[in-house]
Length: 231
Image (cartoon, rainbow, N blue to C red; front, side, top):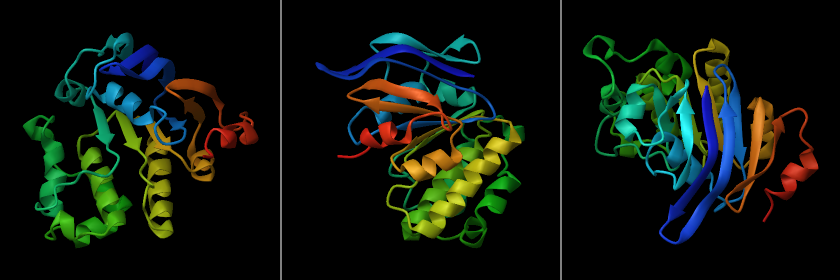
């Protein structure tokens, strides 16, 4: 279980997060929603270790990981699918997937079958360079790379951004499947309410660096959530 407790985060004098708390349980999808610029990505950076909080702490399975480096968190099973995908454009699909081996012991450095069963196009394009893939295919590759790490906590930062509808459906089915395995906690950052509501068990809505609404996805007032998503 992930527990974020009263986290503040600053970029110099600018405060991006204000006393943010949330939890994410194994076998469930926790969705973080909000407009652009409200602190969602800053929260994900704090969870995976790319940015240290100014105050508060982050617990993973009871261990305080607040000050651990990103590679130390990766070794504990925390994987990020970053906003914008950030695949390696000059490496092949196969080579991109193999970069996920980094935190694994040598005996575990194989590509799981789930990667290709969830995203068959990757198996067909193993020798193609990552930069030659479409945006949707690159997003599938970024998720596949994270799955190679055998994550116990999977953090997805706006995986539907700029993606064609058919691949959004494929990504949604993949996220649902991963929840049903019961092997990982999933934190999903999303702006599209319909997509989030269909998948999420719990939703946290952010505005101006704070959590302003939270609860089970079936219990939250949809109109109230949508007010925080519109510009």
